Length: 442
Image (tube, rainbow, N blue to C red):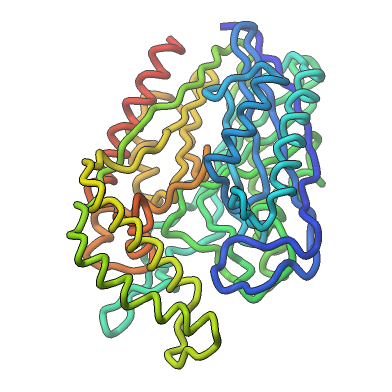
């Protein structure tokens, strides 16, 4: 345990006009303009023995290979290892496509992005000051449970005002130890950054970005949004930049008020970072013949879509996706190798009695709340879209009702769906990770 020191940096990561966008499969061309700029915000923490870097980026998601490249550069330039590098995305659905590979649409942008972020961490290291950290909770609601039941029994992406929903914002305020000047504000709320829909071709941080901007206009230092567990929560209302601004003001206003109501500032803290490897259980590999039949059905349909002769009005994105998953299942059946489950990393950063627990998945609100309530830490903040993107983890109770989140869970691993038991595994392994971090904090 030692005197907390904090350094910060903020860098513009807005892609060029024309960049392909993420978040909706139906977009068929690149960005037409920029409504508001995107940023990476860095907070470096040091207790005299351990240094941690928190990186919040106004992006929809990150892929493991891009993050591996970033981690390598951060290790080389800043000396911070992977377990101490907490990279979270705000999950705006109006940001750039971040798929990374040889045929990546925004490959040059992503390679430059890693340099920008690594450089920002080095800059933050050069601006370290003695600091304190304090926490507050403020009531606010920017979303609505989106698992709506229709009269005919289907579950659709809609509005379910009676469903579970996040109704608070957690605020972490890092301030200069002597002057009390705010250095950085981290705030967490469970809401999808989907105010703007798939017909919008303007780059935007959506409501998370608007909230960050609101706080930075009213409080010194950088302000960064962390997505709480919101796999079943959409922003509400939606589909206009007026709604983006209104929700940003609502959330940002709650954060600013929370900064006037923080608990006792902590000066002496112990920092801990760890990643716990977890295998989420998936369904059994189906017989090869089953996947072969699906492939035989979908391949001509995809060719019809590509050459413009499709008469069934099929979605190209959906057809390509289902075909890819069927091929993955066929490969798994042909290999004959056992599949232990979908591997993910659960990332814990402890700042004294405060813990951030990060998931690469889109976790349902109820699961995050259960982890929060059972955590050994006085304050626990579950955060999603941390350290990559690994699909949805619905609650076990959601599976009988089906719906989008349950359906796309099939994309989880080698075309195999995460099974209902995955919720319990994720919750139990999260608590083990938190217990491990708590033992190290002491």
